[in-house]
Figure 1 (cartoon, chains in turn brown, cyan):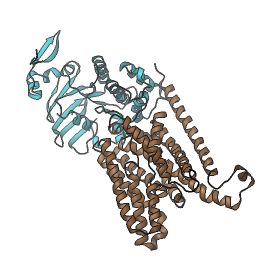
Figure 2: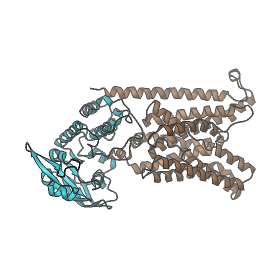
Figure 3: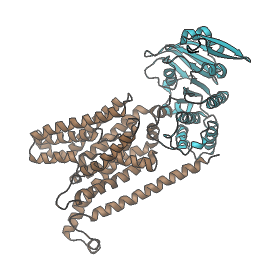
Length: 339
Length: 264
């Protein structure tokens, strides 16, 4: 007789150890991130007390930026995880299949509308912007879900995503044409992804992100059944249509809010869950929190590269994640036989 | 009403696929669904599993309308094996089979559950695969893993409420030995009071293993009853459009094609 319980416990132990390791890693990366930058702050300064300027750099620039990176990285990785469950496709990712770009289109639309038609509402921008990004993300997620219900092959899902991305890009070019310099700069940052401006949204973002995450963890067993087949989940007692609607809202909240904080940052939702699925397990009880931790660390590291690679200028972090993620994605596409 | 009746379908119509289905199945029956491709076997099974939103007519399971069951409660009463599709994500085989425990609210911490799963692993000949990921299996191996998950859910030793086990072409991709073993397990389940309904294509297996068969054609019931009364040369000609002969060997009956292959 095979001791299945022992196997199960060993597997759970491995998951827990990995989660612990990932947590430590995230703390370490955060500290390194906090200490690095063009403006030098040494450990000695931390111990001996900081000058007012150093305090300002640390608490008003770096700390908010690090919190933004952690929230956005975690949200995007988790969004990728559950989008893969929703579409039953391991290559699904909010950036690749157009959800992020459509969300950013809606965000930009709200900026332009506020600028031109409703300047008296400009003070509400920090609420209106995430809300419209969320609406944009929900629309695309719902559309994708509707078309994948009929077992659409991966190629079509990806092509649909590409088309949505191109369409969003085209509309944004139109908007650029009609906008002034300052909003143009803001729009460019939506398209490329940047963590420097997310600080305004942290307080607004934390609650919906946390609620989505808690909801996912509460329903994680049902989601786990769903990822191994819709019919299997139904016959195991899961109300699949209801769960799917909730999942769509969750993906939209996670993606919409990430986009409103940092613009379009692609491939985190693809790369992070994929690596964890291969190295550890696809059980969502592990995969969701592990993706959140590793996604946060990954974006912090990417941002560290973005702001310290060149002394003179800062790269958009979206360029870093895409340069790493796109080759990985191409590798997966070429390796998979069934596409 | 027949007191041992567990399933009652009355005047079921579903899109263009099922027409005027009236069926009654007794508790502990081992019923095989037969019929040509596209005759409605899979549709009928998914309907029996509780996918009943868009169909007309009434389906009662254990005297209660299926539409009135909460989904979670239904999962305690019946298990359904849909036609196999490859998994998009992979976990080890034993964890996949343990998914069948979820509706029962137990896990591998339960000794009895481990015992039941172990027996199924041995009988289905998948014990050596337990730690392998389920995307690294052959078609026949994956099919047996799926069967194991389904059977765990309605195993009478773990689930006192279970009454029905539905399987859509469980024998597809299995070699002869495994086919016979699966049929034997299904027979044991039915003897323990679990009604088994499975679709298969092999008429001879139906003749020799079913307590009852149901023959479908173009979404209509052609006949229900003992296999050797339903599967006559005339009915087979009418439903499958194939000429056959019935052979009797040592008191057992076999259906063979009458037409010899052209090359012989």
